[in-house]
Length: 81
Image 1 (cartoon, rainbow, N blue to C red):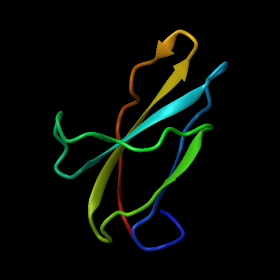
Image 2: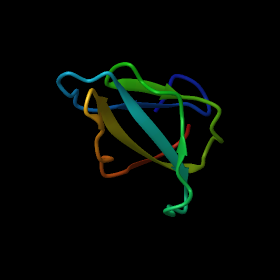
Image 3: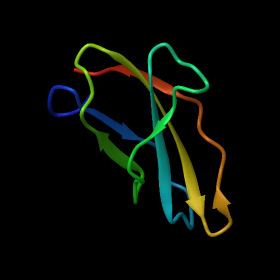
């Protein structure tokens, strides 16, 4: 969870030679068209703000390298505090 209400901290294993990470969030219920991109993350962690406290969210991430964007991770889920 994040430090404040409506915040989630997300972290993941780093990838070699990464330029950035694409982070997407989806409100529950999880749907293929519900994903929204948030700001790119320059390293292997980010704080997602502006969420509704008590609501369930899904987060996924993909590494971006010189070869392009990789596949997205399996989604993780958490309730925003």
